[in-house]
Amino acid sequence: MNQSKKYEAPFTEDDLKIIQSKSKKSNVAWFIANIVLGVIAIGLLKQPGFGFIEFLACLFFVISFIPYFRFFYKSPTERDLEAKIKVSTELKVKYKRRNMDNFHHYEIEFEQNPDFDKYSLLKKDFKRVNVGDVIYIEFSKYGRWILKMECNDEDIENPFYVK
Image (cartoon, rainbow, N blue to C red; front, side):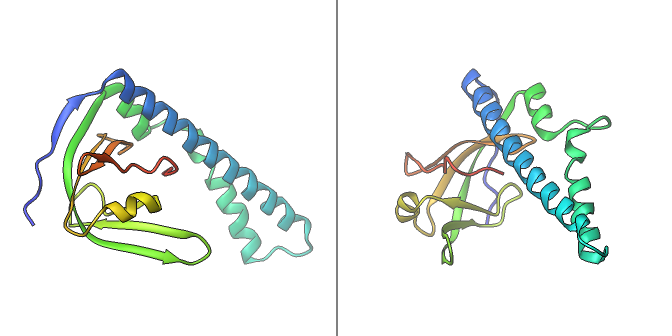
């Protein structure tokens, strides 16, 4: 496949608001996951004996707090908010997958590109997208926060997608 062209442009105020909102949602989800890991780790520590599984649970709990103590680097979101650059490109749909395990999961996979491999869609949008369709996407340069995703001039961005 020929690599599609990518264009860079400055953020609009709406783009900044989208990134800040998505970042907050992601941080809340991360914080809740930390609390769950902490409860599991404390529960395992109260049991007699301290084995490998208990050690791993505690280790993951401690490691999960590393992003909160960024003294030596900037997060991709912070870099996005400073640079204020978005990227626009087109991606071609290579495969469609529907997994019917405990949760219905609708996913499209893109032809090889350096930015995105796959993306989860809502059922209604999954039905509108076909293999071979071209998806227009705008995303932040460093954090790759999706700002806009369209197929055939229809919005197909999944509002529940949190990275």
